[in-house]
Length: 199
Length: 336
Image (cartoon, rainbow over all chains, first blue to last red; front, top):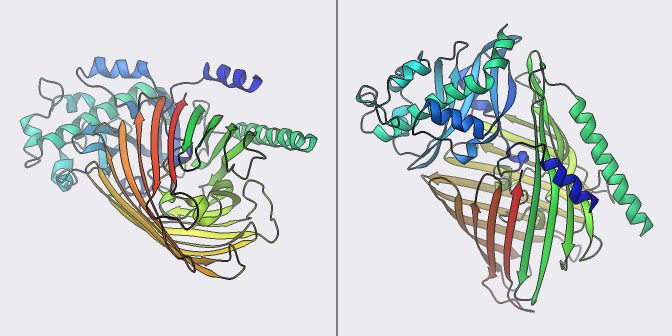
């Protein structure tokens, strides 16, 4: 009985957790190395994405939501070269008609997209979003600039961006939504820590 | 009874002390403790149709993960999982228990992985962890009904030891020495385990790996070589594992054994629902017929905390003695 009471009390102090056991957590080691080949290590900063964050996302990006696996504790990686921060790496999942699309985003210190890599994308048109031409439309852009690539519905990519992705408008929209949420959540949740780190 | 109680308390004290020591280690800066803690509770009902009985397993535990770092980045991470587990009419009961209605504190995974070495140096893992072998290396089944028969095929699912692991540009490996004491960090009757897997990167749509095992556990020697693969297409997954080897399980003579598994799975677009079917074949030298099993299951993530799992396992071939296996299992799991 004491054991049960102890664990019940523990629950009161714990944030939302995702259902998978923590021994299954894997860092995107090879993708971080691909995005920052000069890095010597990475620095993890773990923060909780909760319902408050979800509401802020819904407010800043109307008609958008977070997938349930996006709630719970998540890691932002700082790519390090010795003691110098090169940039940030943030992995986000976005639901699509091919299942979850997981993109590893490289973000610079001004919170602009530097590059990205697919961790998981089971669309037959995956090669399109991995092309340099497609990536070019995202690289160097911040949250406000990426927002201008959204249609008025708040969910789909506009014609200017879709033109970069022959016959893949849905996948383009998925990548755009992922980029927007990534930059927004990075700022909302990790902004304070990143300012301290770069101080 | 007294000895059991002493053992129980010693295990709890060790686990709590180790956990506190780990949490006292630093994470960089004052802004994040880089700690994940979850309460993990599950209730599992097993109905063995062949034996005509039912049993239950209750587990209530803490699952923790902590990243340690300094000014140059991450040093490593720890995983600690301590579960209070109660059996009810569970026959046969797992080796950690003393009876079919026993209750124990069980340490599942408890290890540290040192990751701060130079690029050419492997990460070093020390503690109690899953044997790096076959599909289980990239698909964690901890606390789930989904299973890749690690315990049955290899002699144990977890053990205490030291391992070397690394994710390279196109490959990843995990090679480990373990003591063979299973839940106890000690060598028992010259026990040992050498086990490892070399595979392609496990985030890709097509994954394959080669595994080996040379072990002596519970006075049984086992040697295994295995090949595993996974292929994902949209929301479908097809995977398999085939292991060849030999052991001296029953007669103290080496007998060849072959194990293979084929799995087809389908997830919903939002991944709340996963359905899978497995075909498992075990062929043992001198046995007159091979054992063939079919396992069909599903898991449904009701919300971020609650998961319902169902599984039905049936034996296809008729055994020489006894009835065909037919096991139904239901599990409700809550993580907070």
